[in-house]
Image (cartoon, rainbow, N blue to C red; front, side, top):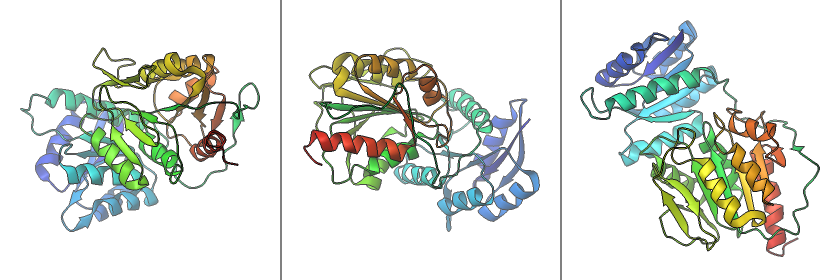
Length: 348
């Protein structure tokens, strides 16, 4: 049985979440509280497997609550908030930075047309999160691994970087991009599995946190150097040989849209040895087979290591099938890329 604690200052919203979660026979709600102090007390007493929380508390900093919960006991925290309120979206990603693992859209009401979809997503996410052993974000002594020897990067002419991530990905993507300040770099395309309605907030958060030019990708737009392009809601992201963005509303791949597999396949076929593929933390196998295709086409390929991954699904599969040349923590991926970009820019 999965034990869930609901933290929400709205009794109506909390009761709706309790109704949703309790509808699944494998989930039990062990408490509903309105404040961080109450949450810490229940966590100590009942040891919930997952905490769901809103991040808007009158007179209280929801981010502080997130940090306090994580410091008390590393428990998967799922932020459930209103997607289309700008302030909520911004706070949601700050909560992710503080330790929360996932963001979901809060249902408007039981009668809303999207309620059943949202209900299923909340239950599915809580179940998935309950299986995760939370990785604390302290500096770790992770070892880098190289499949089939070291890689000679000096002769590469890098034109594009493709990044894919899922659970735990927002912080990993942020950590990667923070290293590109004050550096000229080729276009970076990012597919992050995230609840519909939060992609723009994700891009805004990355831009505000890194001071880089981070944009939501637009169909037909030409790629520019030193710009990060984030896949929009519900559309696959690809690119042509001429550097034109392609957005596709075709079928889901691996049950998701946008799909990392779609992006990596597009980059492999159109850029080959002039590209880099990076597969970060995430559940499932999206992107792993296509990362191998990128490698076979001559690209430099990376997968995040198990020690630093929140979920070693996607990068683990990439490592298992030999898709990744480099298997390492995100900071070392960034440093290796900077060496490559330094060569490209004629820097020492």
